[in-house]
Image (tube, rainbow, N blue to C red; front, side, top):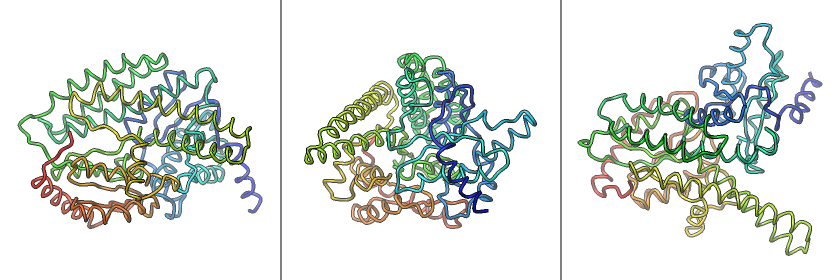
Length: 451
């Protein structure tokens, strides 16, 4: 038994990391439905057979191979990959070969437990017949989610930029959904429209992504937004505006958060969720920040070799962040004003908000760096309430709650924590109804300043 454990831990170095995706199926977990599908389409445009796995169908498998102490997304994604491989075995029979797949599970450097998902899942896969040969492809925040090693080096930059662009466009489609659905003429029309639009954009990214023909992609998005505006009933008055923050997976995964946005809409709200691109910008910003700190330290120590190395990193991460923020701004400049989609905050500005109020520090890392100042900005921008969505026992979101909750009480802005695990909390809907009652009161007294 002891020797098996040693083999499993050794496999972390051999079967978790960056592997060539050539002639393999790249399995992408479904966190954000639209974002996952547009990212997969972008990879397919570069000749990579990428597939978004079904999600939540294997939750019972995820529970079977976890103890319940893990972060809730770990249970869901574990179930997703086990369910997918089980169905592939049934479909292919003797032709099934786990070497034909690479399962995508990125990581962060901590202290969030996300950094341990792929290690834990590696041990689970190693314990199952045949699946010990299934490789886990991992990108890390340590290098800003670099794609080096996945495809030919000369195509890495193009793939990264097209992938980031797909994330921004997916954010726009999500925000289009949340902007239209509370005001739709016909119930259900917005969901059907956005689903169809997602498939249209998949085709656009497969066709235009490899050549970075972003204007052609945005041409299609402009048409979608114009069509979407026709779904809005102008007779429906504006509703309270609710900002959402929290752990990126649970706030983006409609099954994990029990479709909280739709529930908030049912009780009269219009919701704006934090974006996926915001997290991508944060990872580049944080790597740039670390490189600047390391450069200053090496300069004090007169270690000229390290100074040169860190300067190179500053230039690299700085260029990447500039490109991301430039590209995101161009997209929002062209599309957001057409229907009043709320823009993202720049990550540098969010750090300034933390500093000016001495609330938290980017030195501590995690999504609390974004959630805390994001909530402050929601308050300044005239939102009528804020919801913090996260896995039960999530450390960064618990920190966010402890810092923000007293502030929201002082500002008299409704605030709600919504932790999630695999259970249904009996008082959940009552808490949301109470929160939305308070949001309506705030709206009636103060109106709403944001779009």
